[in-house]
Length: 111
Length: 354
Image (cartoon, rainbow over all chains, first blue to last red; front, side):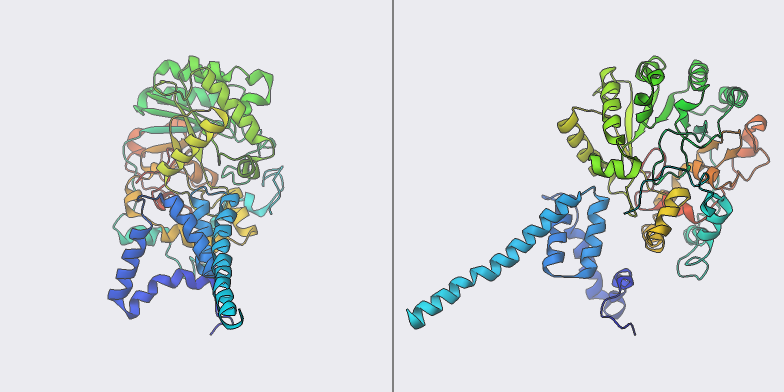
């Protein structure tokens, strides 16, 4: 067994999850590939959304995959970094907006 | 960050300048251990081995390896220090053959083909024969490199040349990283000059196509989507127009192989190529309808095999002994670099094939 939890080479084995649950695995991959097809959003826009989410989820496999995917689609590094900031802003916003809950509680208990 | 090259691998006496060394790398490691299937095994799975040459449609002539640029990923290992230049005698032999082949496309490449001292003579003579599509692969900067080349747009126009030019990205940074400092600005100027004489304009018969190949260790994206992005950016930023974009995969040979190994991307890149293998692309690979002629007149299945010194599998090995009946139906010579032409939507000198 490797001594780290994450091995970059494991990303290549992602498809193997179908081996232990074929129907569910196949349904997932069908859904996944359908989601990323050109639709109301371009595949390029979807790739940038995926990159931002990959960071908020802190998934190293997804970060590798969607950085490469972005490069393949001609996405620039400036666009990639802006997308990550969007994710970061939502993450920090989501933390801070709970501050209102804290304020409500303080006001109720000690107002 | 890899530093821009100023010398060819040949000049540096790099071991990767030797074709056999490249072929050895492509046959050993992950392919020898069976971790990845060889190209022969892969196409055998779908009953496509051996690949065989069909009727000749495209004659691609490499008029020399000399170039004014030293691009990071050049599969030719071209540069100012390369002295291999096609002679007028070989050109004459090619002209004699063109008249008899029935090929609809003549495709001049290099190096920078314009640097061959007999380039203009050859274009003038070849255009008299009247092939349907006469391509010159121009690196664009050559048009601005020296006063003697300033009139190239007019020269191309006079002979109704189809100009095909490399452009790795619509941004300066990515283009210069791959092709050299200042290449982007010179290329933009050259494209504007080609536009000015009518090249690339909507409805114009003066064809101007761009070639996109990725600036790093990744495959090209969808050709149509890339074309849309290129057109929008070049028009908005520089008022430049062109007809089509060809998305071409970098093949793991010569300087690109050197780059893949030095940046520790070789294995991942080969995995990407094998995983993206598309049997439909195999049906349309360019080697089945193309013949590549080297600067010294030898015949190859494609420009990549030429660089790997893998001659055609035929008794007709040189342009001076060209015989259609010996070349048609020949078995194509393959190795693992061929995965580059069968990945995803496929890749050829005319872009995607599937």
